[in-house]
Length: 239
Image 1 (cartoon, one colour):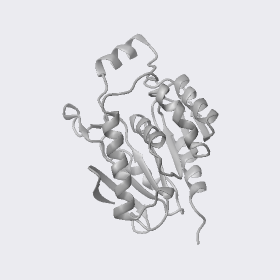
Image 2 (cartoon, rainbow, N blue to C red; image 1 turned 60 degrees about the horizontal axis):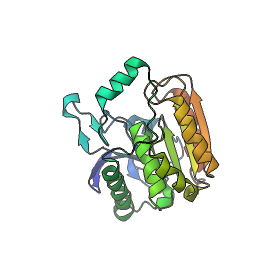
Image 3 (spheres, rainbow, N blue to C red; image 1 turned 180 degrees about the vertical axis):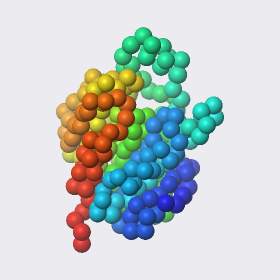
Image 4 (tube, helix red, strand yellow; image 1 turned 90 degrees about the vertical axis):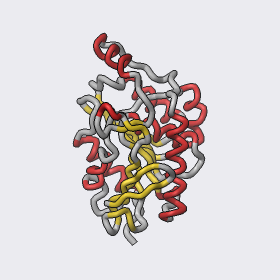
């Protein structure tokens, strides 16, 4: 693994021919969740795409949550509101929310993708963009608002944001292969709203593979297996 600054983000590169993101295989860009360190998803590079020569890029979110050690965020979350909702058992519907900071992080990820192409020669058609939780929200937002072609979209334990803005943009991504996973007992991002996102994407013509599981806010082995199959199917055949 090696580190590069792409755009203004620190990015860890792994996989490929040399273990440092080299070669010409698909590039899987995974954005971590709120409160996680920049290295949080790096171990997935050892779990996914065996034999497919996949390359991986793990951008680190720009906001440091100093009170939580090395935790990072793409935008701030109202933790008081979150704790109150959890204590009351109230379902958190974020579908009408456009978080402050989303636009800045979107721009940072787009600049990072630009540098992946200009500095490392990774064509947009080779990129599978995705993430977990807040990172998957951002990945979905970038995919819908940025016109570059993508090979796929990987959404793990995410939710609908900015629905009135997202839904009109979805048909522009018709045909895009999507893997979306979610836990039926997720206490943070409700399963019902994840299904609403799934249905909206499917109705707009995206090719959604839906992977529910009996669990919470996590990436279980069943999701890793589904993601491995999904990514291996997207990878070009060996030449």
